[in-house]
Length: 395
Ligand SMILES: *Cc1c(COP(=O)(O)O)cnc(C)c1O
Image (cartoon, rainbow, N blue to C red; front, side, top):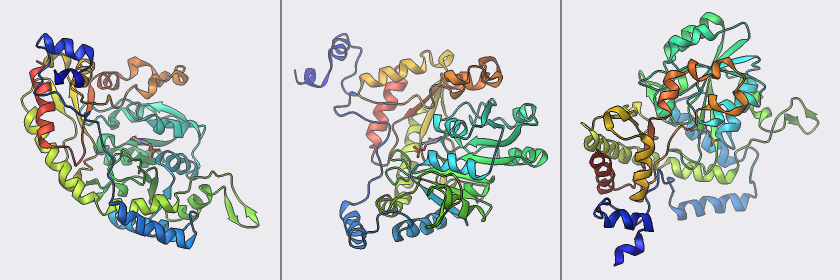
């Protein structure tokens, strides 16, 4: 009868009918991710330095240390820290003085397109590539008008965009290239760090991201002269006690966030190694399942190990993505439809020609098929086995 205590009624009924395999049921919920948390004592000792200094924000020593450490880790020359990834992107776009239209992907997190909205830039949605789910470079050119000033790509699930093709188009039409690299911390491509590509890349340090500062973010960029402008933009445009030179925002990363970041950074390599093993386990248990396609294929230094995402082809698998998402819940496994919904389907873009469903067939299909599975270093291989058993036995 102990079973009853861990099962809700519908689960219990299903169990009685033999539809739930009790061997597989998780007693404690398995979440999509768990934040990478540093040793609390180490955080305490660094925090006591901050307490003693009484310097809590505005270019403090911890922030400067984190900036330096991240430049090394990401192999970039120019990096600016922000209180979150969204404000980093928002102010990065502002720093580039963009106007008019920006070509972007509908298959992303709302923040990408909302950063355009806040800059009075019109997103022009371009369809995605069916294998990487990033912008399909072949579709971009036909959307360029005299109002286009930039291309904003997303390295979806850490899969890099077609950076070379995108750069060729940008050069031809004199456009800026910005990447939302929220999923691509530590990713490299052709032996180059991901931040090397384009004019600017945004990274998010939200708690759910591989590297976190609780909340936080950064921009990396090629034009060193932007360092000063970005510092102004994230601090109300205050140049000195006598002068305010532009309209900015408050978007500074504080000393407490920086302390957490410095400690989390020490754990990232080990976390990546653990996630590599988990990825291998998932791939092993899911290989040969008809209709289940692993989307995050990169390995080693090329991969950010940010998410483990599968695509479910209903015709082959026999069940829909939504069905699997709900069924895994019955077993206490929480997956995420990610990204969902499609940004081009937001109500306030209804009037845009490029947002119409008929113009975005690949994105419309992908948004019904993707599912991010639980993925974090502490996830046990036995748990991966059980999750995959539900997925396999469901067909
Ligand atoms: C997390 C995320 C963001 C937002 O970053 P925040 O740090 O939470 O503001 C933007 N874009 C993508 C693709 C993300 O996954």
